[in-house]
Length: 171
Image (tube, rainbow, N blue to C red; front, side, top):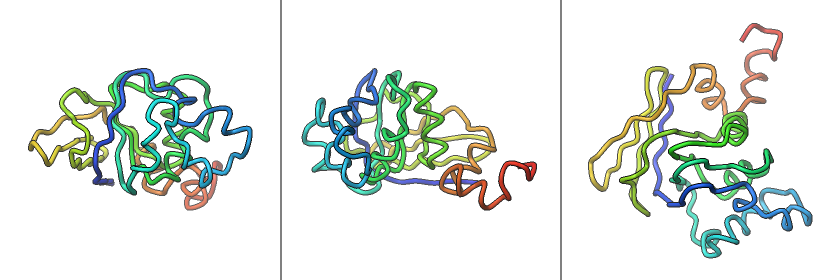
């Protein structure tokens, strides 16, 4: 099994919480990710929603997705076209929400990645690599358990379970 994504790096720092991704005030108006995508990161990067391109990859420091365990923080990123997030570390709830919704998350050293670098991320049972085509450098990410990779390849937990007969099928 292998998964490959390619996209431009969009940089953020440490401790990007779920309320920075999409504010609580916005979620009171609607929880439709297609509507909310226009407001992602509005409190820390107001220009981001207007500049995000389908396929972009978020690159961050430590503790990405901290704060509340809202699934909408993941689905609104996907609605905006984000293909994956590479960070030095993740809040566990965000990490699991991402996998369950089919968003690739990679724990890796992000120190040398720069805004708009073209990245190629390859994930397999044995390893995850992040190659920066701008510099030719590559870093290894923490490998994903094979079940998580299978969930991602299906586009999330619900499609994975549908394809494999649900929970009672011994998947």
